[in-house]
Structure formats: C-alpha cells, structure tokens
Amino acid sequence: MARLKTDPAHFEVVKNALYSAAEEMKIVLAKTAYSPLLKVAGDYSCGIFDVDGNMVAQGPDLPIHLGSMPDAVRAVVRAFGDVVPGDVFIHNDPYDGGSHLPDVNVVAPAFHQGRLLGFGCVRAHWPDIGSATPGSYGAVTEIYGEGLRLPPVRLYRDGRPDPAVEAIILANVRTPAERLGDLRAQVAANYRAAQRLGELAAKYGTDSLLDIMQEVLDYSETMMRAALRALPDGEAEFTDVFDGDGVIGPGETEDETFKVHIKLVKRGDTITADFTGSDDAVAGPMNAPLTVTASGVFCALKMIADPNSLIPPNSGCWRPVTVTAPPGSVVNAQHPSPVVYANHEISHRVADMVMAALFAITPGSVMAGSQGTSAVITFGGVDYRNGDRFVSYESVKGGFGARPVKDGINAVASTVSNMSNTPIEILEMSFPLRVEEYSLVPDSGGAGTYRGGLGVRRVWRVLENQAHAAVCCERTVTAPFGLDGGLAGAAARLELIAPRSNARRLTSKGGFLAPAGSLVVMQAPGSGGYGPPSGRDRAALCEDLLDGYVTAAEARRAYGVEPP
Image 1 (tube, rainbow, N blue to C red):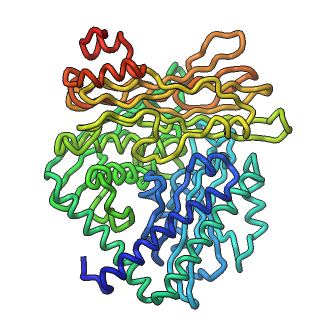
Image 2 (cartoon, helix red, strand yellow):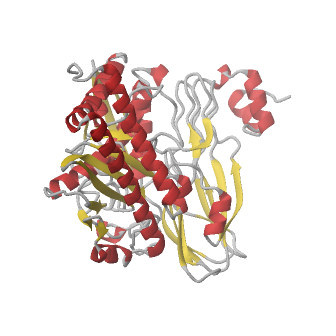
Image 3 (cartoon, rainbow, N blue to C red):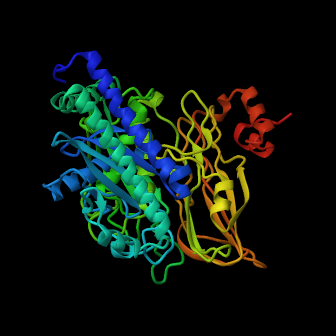
C-alpha cells in the first residue's frame, strides 16, 4: 500500500464514519420497510461505493452480497454517464451485476457542490418479483420464467419517482403495496448515505474524502495480504455433490445430482480458486453467476484469514483473490440459464467447500460443514382475513459447523448468510399461517470432539384457504461433512401432510399446492463435528444428554458411551 496521504488519525475518523454511514443505512431500511423479510429477518445489504463502483464500506449485513454488489453499482456507472443529483437507479439483472431476480438493487449517487462523491446501494430481497410461482421460486428452465428482470433503469429524476417505471414494476408483482413500501425504504436508506457523504465532504473537503475512500480500499488490501501471508502455502482440492436443480425430466423419478469442484492455490499473499471440473449448467435454477460463486469464496476466506473481523470487507479486500470458472458451467452461468436458487445455495456450499479444501493446508483455521443451504420456503395466496394477496418468504436456520476448539452453533444462519430467524408472532400476524412446531432436532449435529450445531424442525399449518408453496433446500441427499474424524451432521427433510392423508416426502426444490389445513414440515440440516468423538469431554457429553441435544442411542452409537 502506498503511504497514506492523510495522517492516521484523520484516516481512522473518516474510515469509521464511512462504515457508520453504511450501518446507518441498515437502520433506516429496517425501520421503514414493509415486509417482515426486511423489517425483522434482515435479508438485505447496504453499502457505500466510490465513483467507479468499488465497494468502500458495507454494513453488518450479508456476506452473500460481497462479491456481486460492486458489479451492481458498476452496471449503473456503465449505463449512465450523465448521473445528476436527484437520480435513483434500480436493477436486478443477474447477467449485469445482479445475483438473482428477487435481489433488487437500488443505487443513488451522492454529490457535494456539484462533484460526484460516490454511490449508496441497497440490495434487498423482495418476497415476490413475479413469475408463475408466489415468491418467485419455481423450478423453471430459463431466466424469463423467474420474474421481472430489470436492466439498470433510472427510477427517480430530480428527486421524484418516474411513475411509468414504478407502474411497470408494481404491475408485475403480487403484493404491490408492500413492494412499494420496501422500495421507498431502499431509497430512503440511500438518501441517508448521500447525506452522510455530503457532510463528510463539507467537513474534510471533497478531494480529501475521495482520497481517503481509495486509501480505505488499499488499507483492506494490505491487511488481507498480510493475513494470507500468515497462512501456509499449498494446493488443495475438493468436490461436493449437490441435490439437484428441481427439474425432473421425462422418464426420471427423482432430481439428478450434480457436482462442483474447486482447486485452491495459496502462494504468499495471494490465493486462486479455480472451479474447472465442475459440471455444466443444469436445466433448473441452480446456475450461479460467477460473482455469486465468488461471494462464497470471499466469505470463507474472510472467516479463515480474519477470524476476529479486523479487516474491513470491501473491494480492496478481494484484490488478492482470483476466482475463475469455465463459462457455461454451473458456477459461471451464462444467459439465459435460470439462477434463482443458486444465489444462496451455491454460495453457501462453496463457502463450505473452501473450508473443506483448506483443511489440508491450514486445519486449525477451518470449521466442519455447516447447514449448506438457506432452506427457503414460500407461501402465497389469498388471505382469508382480508381478501388480500399475500406472499411469505422464510429462510430456516440450521447448524453452524464445529470448530477446532469449539462446538458448532444451533439454529443460526451460517457462512454467507447473516439473517435473523423470523419471529413466529410476526409471521402469524402477517400471514394466514400458524407455526405448529419450532424445535431443535436432537442428534442432528455431527458427533465429534466438538459437536456440530443442531438443525431445526419447523412446521407450518396453512389456514382456511389453500396456498401455493415452494421450497428450495440443499443437503437432503448428502449430509454436512465432519472434519478430522468428526462425523457428518443430519441431512434435511421436507414433507407435506394434507388433511386425512399420510405424509408425502417433498423434493428439495420446486412448487406445490398446500391444501387448507395441511402441514408443511421442514427439517433443516444440522452440521458436521470436528475431531474424533472419542475425544469429547465426558462432562460436555453429559450436558448434551441433559439438554436433549444428543439422545442416549446416539451416545452409544457415535461416542461409545453408556449414558448414566
């Protein structure tokens, strides 16, 4: 890194002010959004970007967006050379800087005395973006079937929304009032970013602010290179098998699995992740744009190289990291392959794959396999209480993998996700659904010296009217892996129990009809254990038995211990 142009104290003050502004964007969005998915679950990210679209500061949001948000802003920079105060832009094209269609990017420039300072960007998951399936989670075979796809479009002019653009958007979604509320919340959060950038420019000078924004990128790069140098050099590979893409072809009775392969090469202060050897694109929506794949790599490397979160996550942080994959493969999707599932499912699993591969190089710095899925479920239909349409979107939490010195964590978002659990009270107030059960699943954490975190069982009852539902879940075929002798965690399981009917096993992805009174059951995966079970402290095992995390039968089977 070149020597700072400003004194260290001045640099630290402005750097931290930029990150505080990004966090403030998050607060504004949460307090003004309409949908529970944004207000309480937190499926969004906020960031501040320089004039070229590089991410300078991200709020405490979702690592899943680390790789692709800068491309979203760069898409606006490329498309509009005439950015002026009062502009706001919107887009969600996965093939032009987006991730998947429900993730809608709203971008606004910031100015001071006529000079462009940079941009704010809020990427928020909309519970519905159109398509034939409420929640936009159908198992389609082309991007055209996944909902409304927007290239970079000017949404506001002179500080006022373009009514024609808004009308097009709202005509294509099932719950337009909620979508408009979320959209306006995204705009408000961007306005807060513009306000804070303008205040910094007024206080410290525009040139100084622009210089420091570049120095923040260099600062993260320098720290990341130092962290990588502290890790051993080496090469490692790992291949994982995915459940499928949700499309069952003619003559097939179940979804067909596919594989992803990664090779990591760590040399000095750089690391390369090459996905050559991965399968070609699949028919269904499990194809990831390369920036989505990169987000999984970035997330895992950040956890490994910077476990204490000292390095600001921004575009500079990723300069030492190269991610490559053959165009047209399942991890480097090309138009018009569908992508909606892959955004979170591929990136989740890629993060785990990086951990598994680097176990061969730096075993003390990685963790066992986590849940490896966002375990998404959507419900949509007509609310019998008021006659309005509704769309519910949830991501069910599973197990966080065991670490070399700690147990895993139960029922929490892992790796690329940083979302909260959707509170039952909020869900039941908002939608015609009732949660009949929400519990930890005993024995779902893999046995080991350190036990894997437990998955959960969540059961919804559909009230009065039938609902159109969809699921997207991985790890129903292969279980989350253990490391260093630790055992695998429990796989996922999905069921539909219609009134007066037996339980029907659901495939891991795709839509279905849930009759009134039916139960939908999702058992999210647990996670892998670390170290041989024989090494587990007996006092810790007794606590597991008392807490109900491990059953007596599992204690005998996995640990070889007869419970007292």
